[in-house]
Amino acid sequence: MRRCLECAKKEPDRPCVECQYFVQLSPLRRVPSPPVRVLLEDEHGRQYPARILVLNTTEFGLETEAPVPGRYVIRLQENLWVEVAGVPFKGKNNVHVFDILCVHRKQGTARRLSREEYQLLAGSAGELIQEISRHLPEHLQDLVREKLLAEVEKSELINALRVGKVMKYEGGRFRYLSGQADLDLPMEEAEKLMRQAIRQAEHRREVIISADGQKVFDLHGVPFDHRSGGLLAFDITEVIEKERKMHQQEMQAYREAIAAVTGGRLYLVNSGEMEKVISEGTELARGEVRQTHDIPEARRAMREALPVLDSRRQHAIALCLTEALANALKHAGGGCWQARQSGDIVRIIVQDRGPGIKTSELARATLMQHYSTKNSLGCGFTLMLYYADHLYLNTGPSGTALALDFGIKTGQDQ
Image 1 (cartoon, rainbow, N blue to C red):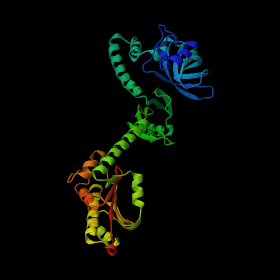
Image 2: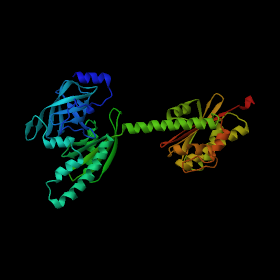
Image 3: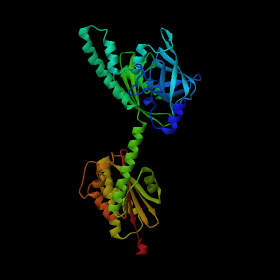
Image 4: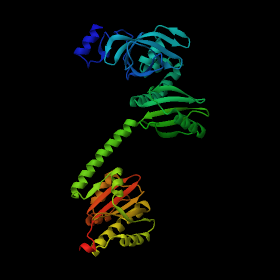
C-alpha cells in the first residue's frame, strides 16, 4: 500500500506494469499486447470499460474508471465469466489490481483461471494456434496453422484500429465475438442491415448516425448462410471530425490566400454566410435556367427589374449574369438566379445543384484565366472578377452559389 502511495507522488507517470509489486513477477505473469479490452459490470448492471494490462491466474491489473474497492463481473465469453474485486491502494490513477474471486464456466466454478483460459487472455496468437493445432494429424498441422494465422492477422488489424466490434447474428440475436466490447451500437439499424445481407446473400454496408447525433458508425454485414452472418462495426466519429477540421483549416487557408490575391474582392464563404448574403436587401427579379435559350430571357427580365443605370454598368451586370448562368448550365444542367438591391448595391445571385468545385481546384478555377476543368468556372470567372466589385462563392458536393455585387448610380444621380 505504502509503495503505491509513494510511487504516485514521486513517479506519477511510471507504468504500473513495470513494478514487481504490482501483480508480482512469476512464470505465469504476462503483459498482453495489445491490452485486452473488457467490461466490468457491478451488481446494479452499471458497466465500466477496462483494459487488462497485466495478469496471472489469480489477479488482473486493470486500467478502468470503475470505483475501487468494489465487486464486478467480467464476461469473457458466452459461457465464461469472472468475478473480481478491486484492491484498494494497490495501483495509482485509474490502474489497480483486481483479485479473481471466482471463475464461472459451463463445467463449474474455480478460484483461478485454467491453463486454457489464461492462455486465451495472455498468450499470443501464434501460441494459441500452436496449441490448437497440436492435436491435429501431423500432415495437416502446417496447413491449418498457416490458414489460422492469416485470419488472425486480419483480426489483429481490426483490433489495432481500436474502433471495431465484431458480432455474430443468428436467429434474430447478436453475440459479441471480439473487438471494442463497450461500443454502443444502434442495434435496431444493425439488425436491419444483417437481415438485408442474409436475405440478399451479399455484403451490405451502412453508415449510421446515432439517435443523439453524437456518433457515426460504419456497419458491415456479411452473410454466413441462410440464417446467420457477421457484423463488423466501426466508430468513425473521430475520423469524420478530424476530416471536418482539416477541411475547415484548408478552406480557411484558401479564403485568406484568395482574398489577399484579389485585394479582398473575392470571398470564399460557408453555407451559413452565403444564406445571409442571399437574404440581404430587396428582391428585384428571379428566374430559372434549364436550357440555353433561357439565358437571353433572364437578361431581359433582369434589365427590366434594375433601376435606371448607365449603359456600361448595365452591360457589365448583364455580361456577368450570362457567364454565371452559362457555368450553371454547363456544369450542373441549370440553376436559378435572382437580382436584389440593398442601398446602392445590386447583387446578382446564381445557384445550382451541381458537383461543385474541388477544393484542390479552387485557386486555379477562380484566379487563372482560361483554366477550365469539368467543375471549374473557366475564363468566365475572370470576367466576373473584373466587372464586379465583390464576389461571394460557396461550393461543395451539393452545389455552388455565387453572388456578385455591383455598386450603382441611378440615372437621376448621374
